[in-house]
Length: 237
Ligand SMILES: O=C1O[C@H](COP(=O)(O)O)[C@@H](O)[C@H](O)[C@H]1O
Image (cartoon, rainbow, N blue to C red; front, side):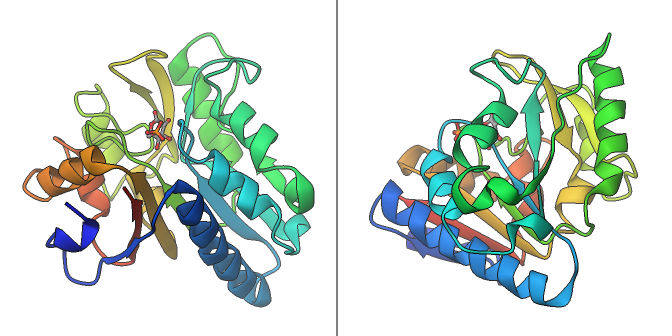
């Protein structure tokens, strides 16, 4: 199966690339052009990216684009509640692979906050996100095989609040079924207002997940909540 075989909702654009490296380069080009267009209009622009295993090549390609990075705020759609030196830290990943080369000049707003509880950390992250240029200019999402995106996990206790279009909180504590369980996630209301929204996925299993998501509710597979324009999907086998 290829992405062109999926009956995506009207207006959702898909791009099929030959492999992960071509996907990374094409997505970096799309994001750089979108940031450039936003920078021509505004003093400060925002880029929100996702963590996980897949975005490293994309981060490295994007970091080499020549942009006025000092006016770009970079943040994360979600974070694992672990110290930034932990191998599972999304902030650590972004610092190592994106905030380097030309992009070393970008301003980073992280979600990870040391606190007594995950709920307190989410509150601190929400407060920090008040300085993020909103609406988000460019959002890059990933997706797990269970249909989660950001850290909006099926079955997580606060999922319905996090998916509510009326939610005013920018970040909520979430629980993942896999370690590290304690997560911080931007809420759907913040993420879904992004002007440019890209979803980067690789492999047949993730296409199966997308196909299933189209028949399910966002509470069952949260990626479903984003499957409408302006979503652009970048996929490779
Ligand atoms: O846990 C997470 O998983 C998803 C997908 O990650 P990947 O490892 O399959 O690339 C990611 O989008 C999310 O940000 C991350 O925290």
